[in-house]
Amino acid sequence: MIVVVATVIAPALADDDIDGKRVRNRLRGEQIIAPELLDLEVVSVLRKAVFDGKLDRLRADLALIDLADLSLGTVSHRLLLPRIWELHQYVTPYNAAYVALSEAINVPLVTAERHLAQSPGLRCVVECLDNTAN
Image (cartoon, rainbow, N blue to C red; front, side, top):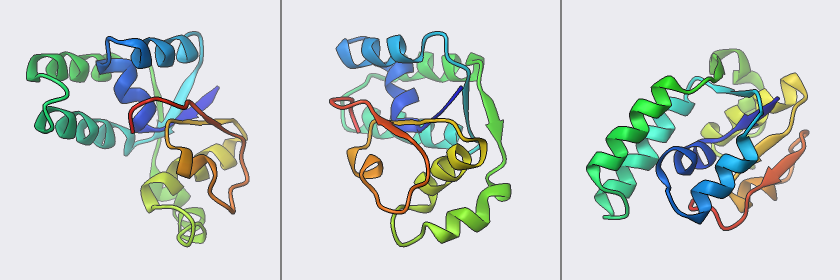
């Protein structure tokens, strides 16, 4: 089991090139869990990619269908609020939700964000998939 952040799931769903393939290979066979906010963050990543011209609308639409079909366990971030707040000096509340969940269930956190992986104050194992779009 692993906790994954949106910057890992978005390319797994929408990137047909090397980064997406690498992420999909990493996730294959894993039980994935994330805070409920993952869905909204993935939509945000896809929206930005469409607006920036990096992803066409049809591919984003297909990625959203795949997101809805993704076998993914979710946890309410409300349960994690105390730890999220404890981390406020080091990471955003959004990233802190993933960290807090990873810490609470004692499983690795998989991210594509090097700055998150290198943040102080984390009490979980963090795996950073370098070279994946942030």
